[in-house]
Length: 370
Image (cartoon, rainbow, N blue to C red; front, top):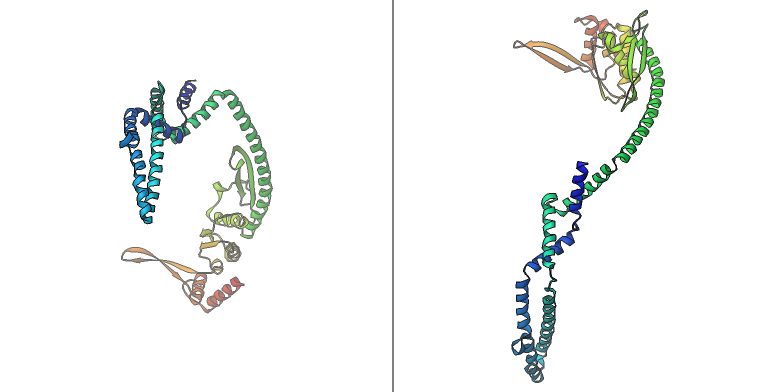
């Protein structure tokens, strides 16, 4: 109620006068005229006197000039152009005299008119001081004040309207959330089958994987939270993936997830560190193949000690740590085809390069390319 009273007072104050620029500018001109009426009347009277004062007035002098001008033109035709100029002067003088006389009449104000003009101007001054500095600012304030006053004045009706709109929106939100939940549960079944298949191929033979869709408070993503559960070994209960997964399993589960979600996962670069943990040579080839398939849609960076996996890379870099001036330096070098074969052979048989290891390395690269 206090704010309603304040807004009502402000609206009434702003509605006292038009807030248009034209009205304010006209009032400013009227103010200048009414406050200087005496001087304006004096100066305009002097002008009329100069133009129309009997024999000494400008109009009479111009009229008298026509007698010698006509005589001059009769003798010399070239002087006719002077007569044309004199005619224009006479017309302009007459028009000026008429206009000034009319202006003099307009300087006559009704009793109290001067006070009214000054009072209205004072209203504009206060409005611009409080709500300005421009009339546009005052207009914007008035518009917002009216809107807020209308909202507060009809608060009960507006409150019911808002509650009704909220109820309708919440009802629609719940319907959408139920649809999303149904789609999530359907997608969860497909994802469970895909992840289990991928993980079994990656050597976790007795794995069970489950996507649990649980109810939660409504939010921008619907009304669910999704938790991945896994049992990597036979006879073990399903437990949250984030709590029980080992380092070796984590890399393979992440690979399986990324492989399964390749069409909807927007991440452009994937980095796998030590994905070969607890993986033998046969599983290395399977893992390398899956990584290669994953790299068709995005960049894959991989750190591995297993040659079966390394052979699938498009590019091979060797990372070596060494001590120089009592500081550990990391050296990264790109391997061309020949040095890559030698490095793969060392990864298989140790630092000694045997012919069998070299042949095996070449064969491994050829099969990876195929």
